[in-house]
Image (cartoon, rainbow, N blue to C red; front, top):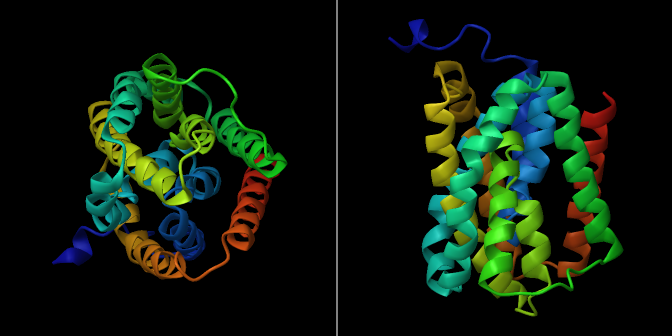
Length: 249
């Protein structure tokens, strides 16, 4: 019965490559609570084009959200999560308009540049030193929402902002998971309303969800065991390589 529904070209070399990409992204997501979209967005946009790669990047996050969200939301600073997440959801439609309007090759390179810049910033150890509080949180959320709709990466502003908070790594991880939970809900609705989710995208997402969940599960088990500094350097190296590849390929 499913033979007539599954796209004939679904199972090809591109799907194998995408599965390997999301498995690696899942390892990072399970360990740190964030970072998978920073691997997925440039690479899946390179494999399938931004108007497929970006929605798939958003939809494939649903599995890890179910695995991580309950505990993370209980342990997070809820005011911070909502202050970042609600403005992000409001600005996502603007980002989706950019995704549709910009030429796919230009959008792919823009996504790669965004991720590469974040990797460089994190590797240099730079920290946000500006003001904190509700106003800056709303501003960070608005920028993140625009990036999420356009490039599938809501994380860069929030990651830099939260890493300068002085909270423990576990608290930052919980806050980011809570924020990404709201982002996922907003992105799914935004992309659906803008006609960016169709049967082809749903099949691609379904096909790569299992390797992503496997990577996330392994990453969760590594969190209490692995050396944080070593894992951080590996993750940043992967971000740099993937974004550079998508930019130059």
